[in-house]
Amino acid sequence: MTDLESPKNGKHLEQVHQNNNEITESEPLTWRFWRKQRYIVVLLAFFGFFNVYSLRVNLSVAIVAMTENRTVFDADGNVSYQQDFPWDSKQKGLILSSFFYGYILTQFLGGYIGTKIGGNIVFGTGIGSTAILTLLTPMAASHSLEMFLFVRIIEGFFEGVTFPGIHAVWARWSPPLERSRMASIAFAGNYAGTVVAMPCSGFLATKYGWESVFYVFGTIGVIWYITWLVFVKAGPELDRFCSKEECDYIQKTIGYVGSKHVKHPWRAIFTSMPFYAIMASHFSENWGFYTLLTQLPSFLRDTLNFDLGKTGILSAVPYLAMGILLAVSGYLADWLQVKGIWTTTQVRRNFNCGAFLAQTVFMMLTAYLLDPTWSVVSLTIAVGLGAFAWSGFAVNHLDIAPQHASVLMGIGNTFATIPGIVSPLLTGYVVTNQTSDEWRIIFFISAGIYLVGCVIYWFYCSGDLQEWAKTPEQKAQEAEEKAQLQLTQTAGFVNSGAELKD
Image (cartoon, rainbow, N blue to C red; front, side, top):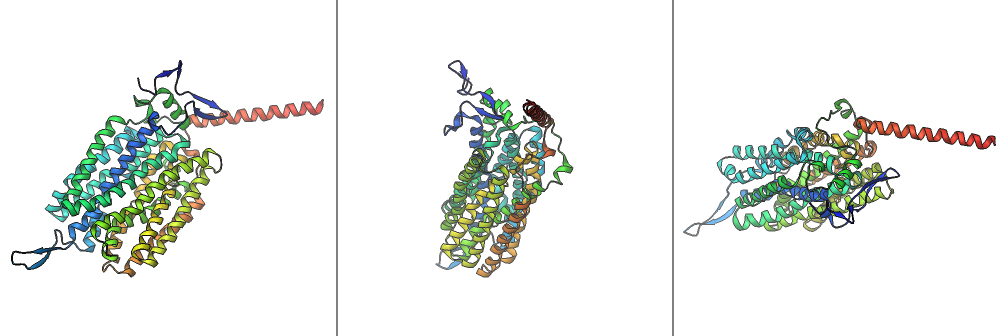
């Protein structure tokens, strides 16, 4: 018997009750998150996303070491220069974008399978497979460029299921008024992984050779995979560590218990403007994010002349800011809803569009400044404020259609993966001489895309459960509540009429 299941003073630690149509817990959520099994899931999801991005970004740093010219002295004292891989800027752009060729193929598949077999299996297997392939990367790169590209594409194929998979997990684990913080804390793992992977990759490549970058992070990913499969289940009703009281609370607040026989209303989905607003925002955020994720180390090294060690550290600074602000934005978004200050729609719209406007401004500042100090400051602010956008569009699927959220994320993330393919290739063609003018074009493009995403989301977003996404039980409950309201109003009219007669 776990702590959450043990009785206390003859009563359970948690009791679910309904008061004025609000379902609460007798033991509220506190800083002791380990007393709630759903936050153990959040913690492990955080480390899962840590691996997602550490496995993804390590190449951005390692490729600098793989292609740099090294000074070599022979026995006679003659100086020469050598490269492990003589790839030009276009080839490097192809390598950095190849991951997304596979990644874009499995977004919808991951969301669909997640609703059938459980998001925990899909999310875990996606990361575990990527970790194993990362261990094979040095051998593939040494074999040939074609083999290297093939392995990166297959890595993307497996990792493509992770975001849709985790939305299938949230659909069964996250109460509506905790949705922003749970998802934001887990998504912060993306940036924690980036923060750790970039400087560590620079250190490992300098100290032990570029191969060590892939061996270290691949091993960490395999260890996480085993832990995740042992401790996380698809839903609270399947988790032996989750008490019945907590399970009841989660399921009653969600109003959906995770049926494996969900029928997706495809026509309604593809004609839903709130869904298209989410897709537009996701695309915009990913364009700026992937541009920096894949190109920032090269920009700092080749244009601003930082050495490889400092490049890894400085490349991580913007993502450190975002990781910290994600926890803040998630908590603030939930708090504003709990206190009734903003509706869910207002929270999503204001957080998302405010972040995009700020990112537009600071991307343009980066384009104008191109100074070693101020460029890093502007990019840090631009990336950091993106945390508020993630508390907007990234959890919005769960607001408008919780039981279809993993499929919506799969469809949306398919479209939002296009920047991961196009942006590195575009940068490779535009930035051929590493000049300030070339990089200015790249930052202007990112700023413009942020602005377009902001406008679309502002006019079409919604935080309300859509009619096409309601379960039969929810529709029946609404009909009953409407009938009771009409009955109450009728009784009120009768009583008022009787008073007037008297």
